Image 1 (tube, rainbow, N blue to C red):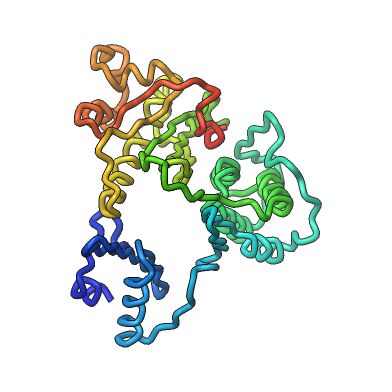
Image 2: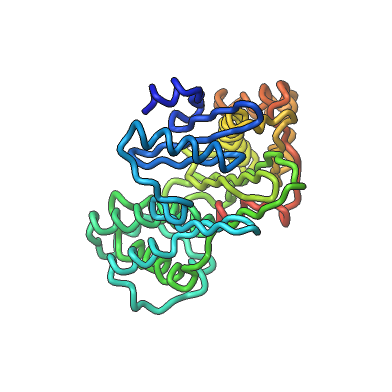
Length: 330
């Protein structure tokens, strides 16, 4: 497949090995491959159809038409935009874990709840718990609002307890009530396709190891399309350091996304704005004068200053109310 696509004029992305792009005479084709499944899209219908006709002559393939369902994701396309949800997948999860008749809830987690290892609680089956967490993690593909809680309960897979399992089951009760929710990508020809990121960190840290949680969110135009929530590997000694570490992971993702967008024909000519609500973290990222207060921070995080100087990213101070990545950290 790789050899054939290269022979007919496609270029394979250096940033994503499953992505192929072909641009000729103002027409663009984009092909993405996942195992034996192929997605193809483009700027016009005619080149897409020619591509499918050519592929069917060479490979044994089935043309499924316009994408409506792909890898557990429901895709609803209309003139207003594209809605990606996982309603059928949610129904399957509820059936697998015998929660199809559970009582729905409107919130993912109770306010102020902080779980730790909880050695006093009853131990639950490791295999079942890991299976549940794995299923929920895949659901975060289209449901960014559940990412923090799912990421949080995934920290206890090595020794799950009844309290952890109860919280995970609460997520099932929540997604039953919100099974039709998803991510919407509106159609708009007037929106500038600028990449903007939001970076944030929590302030409390984990109960067991005091390590904090980093979260980021990326928008392209008006569409939110990329998000993350994960525990930091380094124990931060202050909120400024925690925010700075979170910024570093956000910058890494921003650089990769900029490369991807360039391959897709949407090169970001301006610096990607990274919105951060911690003024001290923004100051540290821009000014090496603060070295005295930051010399304990690992050198690997200091590349943030370099990418700002090269005009790849630009850190911008935003208010707490406008920090959209907040839901991924607390």
